[in-house]
Image (cartoon, rainbow, N blue to C red; front, side):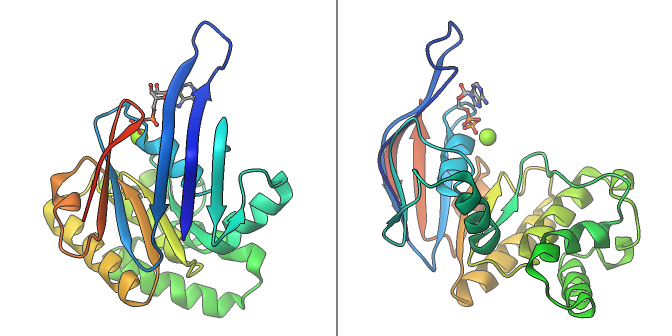
Length: 226
Ligand code: ADP
Ligand code: MG
């Protein structure tokens, strides 16, 4: 369970370009559930997701993970926490150019020290599930937008992290691949994993298997429904 109490996030605080991205956020994200953060562009979805995933610190307020306050932890603890707790699909994907799809997908597993053959088999399995098996050897810069997105999803799944974090994961996917992604999400949930994602795609927040939708407007929670 991830909880935020009276959280705010201000960018460029004290400067003329100061932006209050979030304010007064009280939110509990359940374990073993699929939560979608929705709202218009600029409403604070990515910022909220980054706080939930311990990638950024709130300007004020508290973030707790299973009852432990994480918002004040030193960076080295946060790095370790991120590695063991979260799998990420970033909006800009952050795949490494010059490396193949397979190498990119295997990369997050390296610091955890699992046997190479085992990681490779798991990576190929994830790629096959996302219809990318035939692109395993392709350098990521040669992929289409949708393929890049699927490679990023496969990479996020490689460590079997308990919490999958995804920022607009289906933005470049057609309906069939969006459904495939939702099937993967449903399978993760059935395994007892937690999924938190942002989306302004009605196919996502209307989907069966989504347990909670949190609606953001101007950096505030405007509604929560199941
Ligand atoms: P969303 O994901 O819903 O589009 P964001 O969380 O990306 O919203 O952004 C919320 C607000 O914070 C926007 O006004 C955006 O311009 C601003 N913002 C986001 N990231 C930064 C940043 N690193 N520096 C300054 N302003 C930012
Ligand atoms: Mg965003």
